[in-house]
Length: 112
Length: 114
Image (spheres, rainbow over the protein chains, first blue to last red):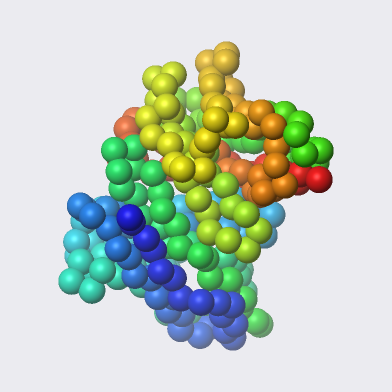
């Protein structure tokens, strides 16, 4: 079945550091790929998405590129802020109902 | 900005009791989902729902679970006889037009079965 493998956490960075969170996937067909973010006490919010190979999703300084050849969708940000502290989930959608399959989540803490 | 809401935010129940978790979708959304996250584990798909029918369901969604849209606004998940292992955060998600659209998540209901 479909699966998402996500970089183990937690990740702790200093403000303005470069962020990479690795995500690889296994899927049949042509899934769409997503990054969701969960701030403390809140639900999952869509951060960015890409629906086909070589698409780049971007939002709030975060970027991820859909790489079909390496089945990856790594999340990057050039300069993190304290407010980026959250749990980040990589996910893919597939199946007739496009249900989401999630990775295990990566806890990011950014220190001032 | 419109958002998905869920009630209650927390629920504690005794094993064997029935619980109903409620979700109010964004008003023009037509596709609905339930997911759950057991503490420390991945977010898992339970069921999808469209046009008053279940579209897909996972292996987790057994006969103890049911969903319905009783009044055209609420979308509910019922667990008939709760088990200890049902303790989890339950998320409702909705999308606007079809299953390819982005899913918007509610804040979740934390269920604790004692």
